[in-house]
Length: 205
Length: 85
Image 1 (cartoon, rainbow over the protein chains, first blue to last red):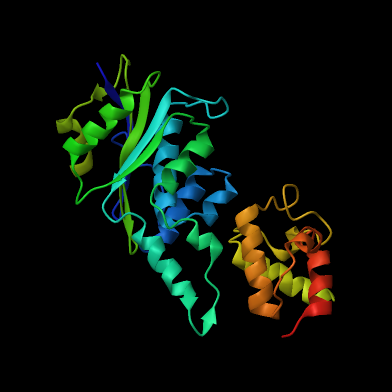
Image 2: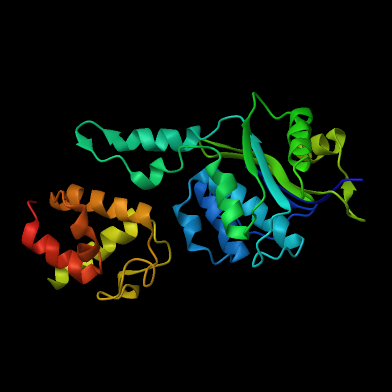
């Protein structure tokens, strides 16, 4: 029976890892600077983080916490894990940033902002960081929908050799962060049952 | 030249979001790519934009980029000779 073996929730109000609030001292308002505070708390030592857009930062941080909680071995290439994320606003947060760099009077669109104008980049960032070689996918939904996400996760498990799916909701727009990242494992003796009800509960709590 | 090198280091830090790095941390003669600052191809594009935006230099011969972006010193040298602003 599949289990949710770890989860992380990041919202404007709080960070929750497996039901507990890590002791992160936030000094600023919700938004990009708060993501940097979480990064510093994690002491992740990954300078590329600072170049990411906010959506990728949020997905990266939640994934980082989930994988650390599971003592995930990020040094060994892993073809048995997939990454499946979804959200509502796609990459609109970065799209707007990119649009702001397109000024007809001072025309210097930023290449490094442009590369994040696709929502699935976050799945790639997480896969690269953790040497995850399974399939990655990103879905855009009208709203958080545990039933649809359950279907996407099941699709990922139907690929041969996939035993784990790092999955969830990674929404970021206009300084508002709404993220739930979970690890679902095919065969694990511990963890909570993987079903639509529990996905909903983790999101709503 | 020293002033231009310092200015360039500050601009590189800002353009490439090199958080936690100060101008003093950047070795003027160290390679910018792979080793040294470990920049990538997207960073190279940002440096091309930086040269045009801040110094009015359009790099029209991609073959020259490797030499120009070898280090902060080579960038500064090229800017000194070719700047239009």
